[in-house]
Amino acid sequence: EKGANVTLRNIFFANNDYKLKIESMAELSNVIAMLKDNPKMTLEISGHTDNVGKKEDNQILSLNRAKSVVNYLVSKGIDSKRLVPKGYGDSRPIDTNETEMGKSNNRRTEINVISN
Image 1 (tube, rainbow, N blue to C red):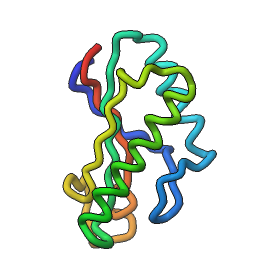
Image 2: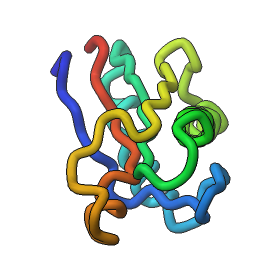
Image 3: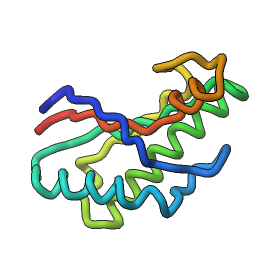
């Protein structure tokens, strides 16, 4: 539904990089199937980081990671007009940045339903 927000748990990137790892493809296959089953659905693909490093660098990294996901989905036949990449850097933590587990939880990719 419009406004739904889902964290994609199995999207992986190398440290400080935005190239998708092969382990991400199964999760992205689910997103592709959802988009094909809902041809009017548009999504925001949002990238998030922990607070390690400069805020500006984290902002750029999170946007580039979101763009990598969008580019992959487009390469699989999804219309780019249905996908909006956004980078939030470390501005929207869901956990503490004081522990490694918390930082790991904050490094995530989410999909947000814009319209359906």
